[in-house]
Length: 146
Image (cartoon, rainbow, N blue to C red; front, side, top):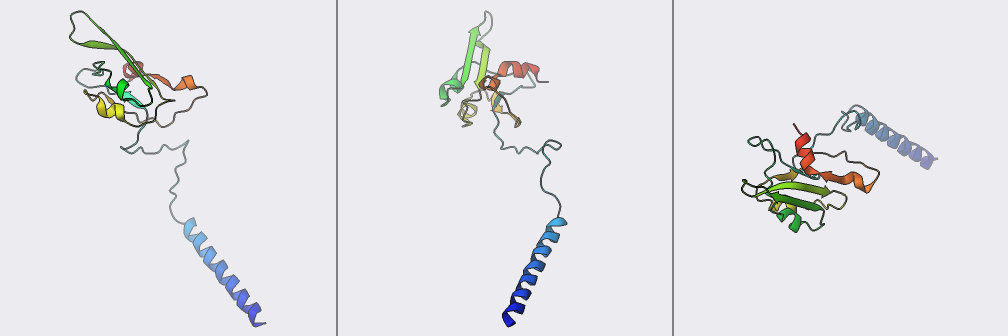
């Protein structure tokens, strides 16, 4: 009979402790972001795909088509090409594409860029149904940006 009441008291006490934890969790503020309706705050350390930086003084990128980003990429996902124009010093970038499906987000291309024209994008809602959906023309993206 003594063990019956002992188990009854232990079970009742564990029930009270459990209800106490539940009530405490019920009245604490919500920390979950309701994703489709609310957007998360992106930290400065977030690494999205690479993007060309649009500089204020020129209104465009400062890519000199040196190809160092393409050579240093271990995933071989960057294609850079340019042409020499008459009367202009240096090359003009005509092709800058990124295959984000192959990119490993190592950051070697951003670190090696001599003009600091490459940086990480803040986009985190990347989705697609085919591999071709992740082929980005970075020159077109710079022109579309305000």
